Image (cartoon, rainbow, N blue to C red; front, side, top):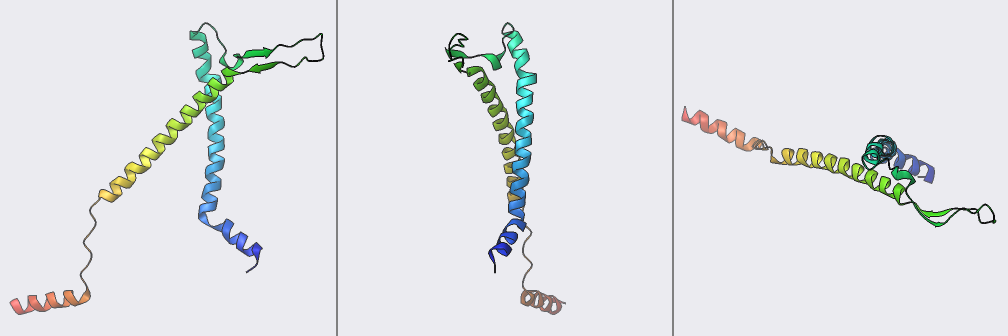
Length: 135
């Protein structure tokens, strides 16, 4: 078997395709959460805190200086970090709820009583003979 056919077989397996779909949907979900945090959640929070824009919060380590060649701003952007932490918490909460739902479904399946296995053909035959003898 050539390496190309082995690779084709590997890619065609359902788990690899499911994983790829999950990664793509996860990336899209991350963008949705980023947009929700940056454009929906943080503006009202900033407004409640006196018009504060979290994405612009930073500690300047070296300010811009137009007079020198070093006109590059060096800053710790803790506001962007706060936004990222909120995004992480939202994603973690959604994943927690999904896992909790899947675990509940698995527990319900495990708790469901299993049907008793059918007796072997020999036993069925013996029970029929017994019933005939009782008559």
